[in-house]
View 1 (tube, rainbow, N blue to C red):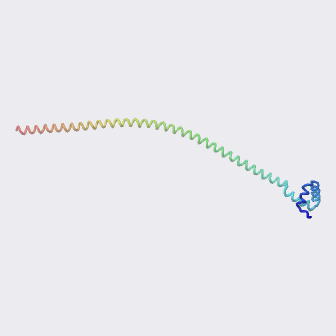
View 2: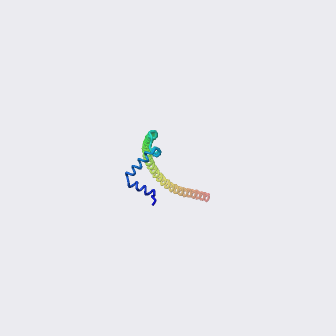
View 3: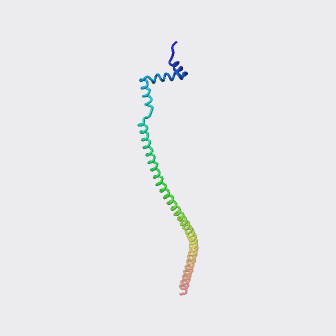
Length: 160
């Protein structure tokens, strides 16, 4: 019967004391110990690694604070610009209100002028009718005067 590697691993899993003895045997062997230490050291951070990371973190933190400071300045400038815009909008609202009032006054004046123009149109129409009447009467008078003159000429020509 042959023993498989898997069977050996199972036996070590079941027997904690045997596992410890195997570990002691492996660690007591200088070449194995060196291999284990090198493998462990690769995963362990050195002081230099920690200092390098600390430096990188400090640099990163300074960069973040600089960006935060820049953002605060920009927000402050934007707040100033915004307050100026709000003030200008308020001024424009006042000017628009004043213009609305002036437009209303102009509308009233235009309405009054429209009424006066309508009244003048009516008066001109009445004058036109009177002028037509006067023109007709003038023609009648002229015709009457002419008829009178013709009659007098005829009378004068007959009596002579």
